[in-house]
Length: 355
Image (tube, rainbow, N blue to C red; front, side, top):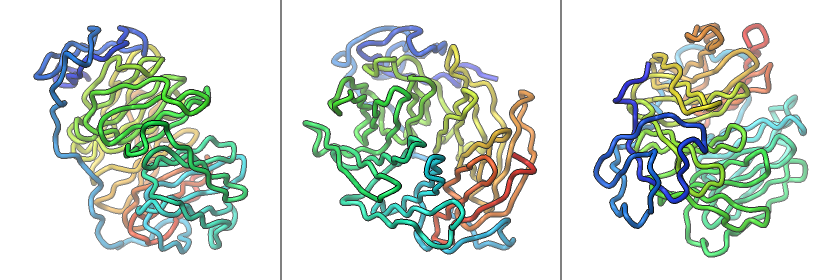
């Protein structure tokens, strides 16, 4: 399933360890790059990484099939949607990054809070214990879901840095990605404890255990960091134009190859391995998971499909019509929430018979 064309050249970083992040890819030498299994110094690799035109979601056509489930009025264009178990809430970050709207799970018609952010947020992640974390210029925000309180955490010495991705490791450490191609791992006092460089642009961060994975759309690559976060370990090319990434509860790393029309499934248990590549038409983009299925939205057709990955070959188990521009998905296990990127509402689909 994986051949030499899947291996992505990356620049060696200070702190690279051959199996520190459990990786096995063989990395090819290219301009400005060295073998990913080697150790090296950033100063010896001055060239910028080779890039492609980043892929993006399709511009969805008008809806022709009535969306499944119930569509609740919400006119904001969604950038991200998150579910928090402890507060039983659904939160939507708007495309302009200025607002987080919080809904109680059982009352999606009336917002619990509409939180105005002091500056635009670019990415969001939750801890499932009542707090949202949002990347922004110079640092990140925390939003207390229960009260709606917003706090800004500034990163010393990086006030002008545009942060574009965020995740929170199980040990509580925040990891930020920037538009200049660096990943920052913070300590408990929110100081930069480690930095990994050499990416073109950080578009998404995810973790399994304390291993952080990086999605770079401009290289269509998935890369894992060393445990310390001070460099990269190995990387693999992620199709022809990867756009989104999600770590599920079964140790898998899911990636939507929007340009290549595929769902990519990477393993991170002992190595970074492309375990499955399954064709998905219609510009796959949004990703979510429920107890049994992986959900992928098709932005070119306003559809979401549920796949069972348990057999080793993805098998379609469910298919639903969605609101227009189904860019953002999340599930609480029994309901799939689809937030429209076109301002056409927040959709709730009962998936108990399929999930």
